[in-house]
Image (tube, rainbow, N blue to C red; front, side, top):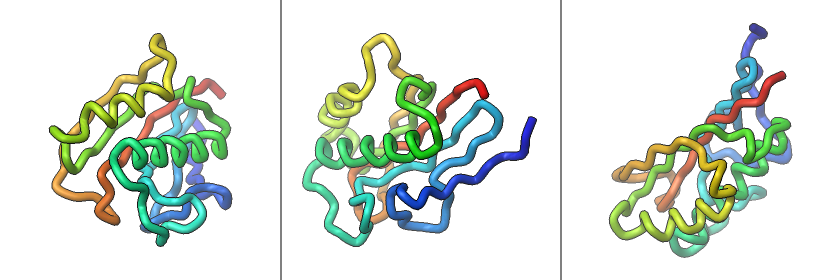
Amino acid sequence: MDAPVFIVLPEGPDRVAPFSHAVRAGPWLLVTGQMPTDPRDNRLPLPDGVEAQTRQVMENLLRVLDGAGFALRDVVQARVYLTHFARDYEAMNRTYASYFPPDRLPARTCVGVTGLARDALVEIDLVAWKPA
């Protein structure tokens, strides 16, 4: 297997910390958790509400997937982090599910957390697989 490739995309979402947008290891792509930040400037205010924040997170994930040569159809697993689990779970699910065909939903874990960077309501990371 080739050495992992650490991917930092010039067109990727503006990073809020020291990390790669994704790491490719063979057919696997590990996508760093994305925040609901504006992809051009992470200092701008976050969208209001968990639905708008989930939409922005998904758009940021799409940007990273595309930049790494992957697509949502390649996603096999997702992890979702919510700061207000009971309040936001259903609304986040509606928005999240709208990005995937019903017959290609990735395996998923969703957990409640005490806090996220920038006081975000949601963060999502992905694992994708595509043969070389």
